[in-house]
Amino acid sequence: MAKSKIKPLSDRVLVQPEPADDKTESGIIIPDSAKEKPQEGTVVSAGPGKVENGNKIDMSVSEGDTVLYGKYSGTEITLDGEEYLIMRESDILGIVS
Image (cartoon, rainbow, N blue to C red):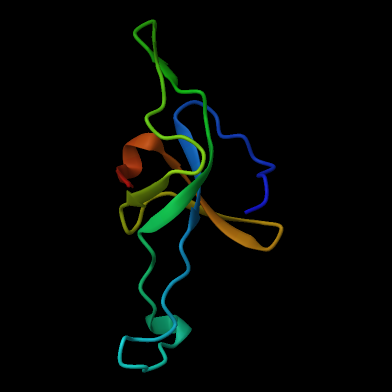
């Protein structure tokens, strides 16, 4: 994974989604139009956190964490031919350990 040229602001996170499966377990090839949108990815970069009511709230995730997020979370962007999602930390459902 290359170092990102995007530094998210506030409580935003840049995530590289895991690639969607190309085949089923039985070996059937899945066409692009029928692939499930991935809901797991790796945090490439995270913002510094946010300030709420004068208090700084640090991020719960950091670079390299594998995270789960909602199916329609984030905004898709393409950088150097790679697909990424940029989303708020609150869109992340959990960290996979």
